[in-house]
Amino acid sequence: MRGFGVRSNNKERARGERNPLGKAYYLEYKPKRIFMEFFELKNISERYLDLVNPTTPEKILIAGRVAGMNKGNRVIDFGCGYGEVLILWARTFGISGLGIDIRSVACERAYRKIAKERLGDRIEIVCGDAAEYPFEPQGYNVASCIGATFIWKGGFREAVRTMQRAIPPNGRLVIGEAHWLRSIVPPDYVRHEPSIRTEYELLCTAREEGLELIYVLHSNHDDWDHSESENWRGLADWLDENPTHREREEVIRHLHDSQEEYLRYAREHLGWALYVLKPAG
Ligand SMILES: C[S@@+](CC[C@H](N)C(=O)[O-])C[C@H]1O[C@@H](n2cnc3c(N)ncnc32)[C@H](O)[C@@H]1O
Image 1 (tube, helix red, strand yellow):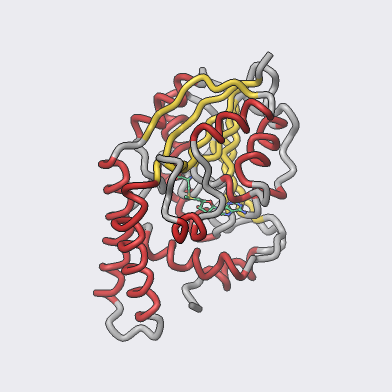
Image 2 (cartoon, rainbow, N blue to C red):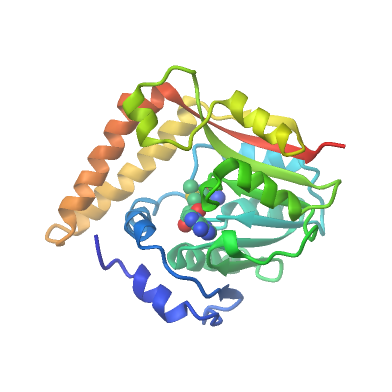
């Protein structure tokens, strides 16, 4: 799939330039072609979504409260999407935030929302590969990664290991992650989603990495339905608006594949939760 504007934006902005919109910076990085096709579809499908995960603003706020967020705290959010998580926490708890996302389309939408909310003095967006971001060690009260631990090659384990370096011993991690709901899952679906673990495996990994789990907020079917259906609605509306687009067939295929995957497998086998963790000690 080609040509939904992301690539040209990345080329223009891939050299550490300042975003003409203001306080959003573009790190130098090599766009990963394998992701770009997926990202182009996401840019189409996510138009109605602010939070790009099967969760709710209420659950994000509970996680922030449990993580002890207070006015003046610093939060780093890896894979920040449209900035909604940081916006919710900044509005409610008065935190300052740094969000990193690889998609220029997401970064620009995040920046526009932040400006509209008049939070530009407190939330900064960096566009680039979060796995390569040179964050300040122990520089943040909370490090979060909501539905994006795939940013690191080592997935959940590397995510918790890296994120832990961003916080002091009394800091907190907030992680949103998918998990298998049961230990027996159809093998073809497991092959399709090789990085997913059971919650018990996630718990064991977190403990092995020196973390204590202090809170969990599970997603329910309504959360999943909302998140999946809003993606479908975004794709369906794009198809209505682009009746002769040369990549129309690919968008239709993506819509159908995602509906089949959700209703055939994910609804029964896939869970999602927000976890609040702290360094054990
Ligand atoms: C499922 S979305 C979650 C967005 C946001 N955390 C939220 O909950 O609304 C995952 C995000 O990770 C971003 N992403 C993927 N790979 C990345 C990378 N290597 N570095 C930074 N962001 C990345 C995607 O662009 C996408 O916005």
